Amino acid sequence: MTEPDLLNLAHTYNQDISSAFGQIVTITFAMIVGIYYFLNQAKLGLKIFAFAIYTVGMFLYFSLMIVASNVGLGVFESLQAMPQDQLSRPAVHLLAVRDSWVGTTESVLITG
Image 1 (tube, rainbow, N blue to C red):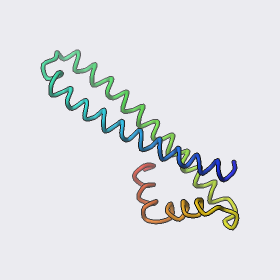
Image 2 (cartoon, one colour):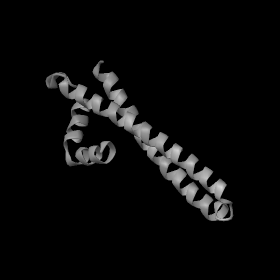
Image 3 (tube, one colour):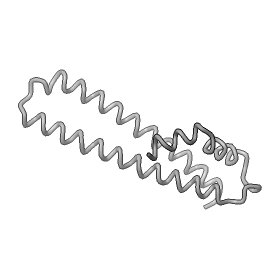
Image 4 (tube, rainbow, N blue to C red):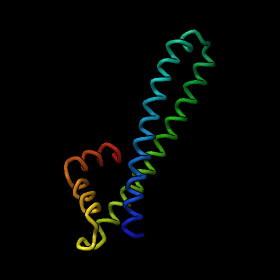
């Protein structure tokens, strides 16, 4: 892949992770509201069904985040493997941020 392709993929990776995280937060808050207003009065079967659907949905979003983070790792490994003197300024700055404490923290939080 070319450097512009890798930079585009890195941008897409960041969008995928932030979108999935936002969806997880939104669905969790919706589940809390649903439990408080609706499931509090529901029978056990409906509570178990809602929990099962919620669990499957969270697993799917978590799986999407894992896939996107692995793609991101591949992108950064590919950029670091390229000759450093031929990289564009955006790629150099992206790798610099990735090697800083911000990138390390992001790496630990997202990829585990």
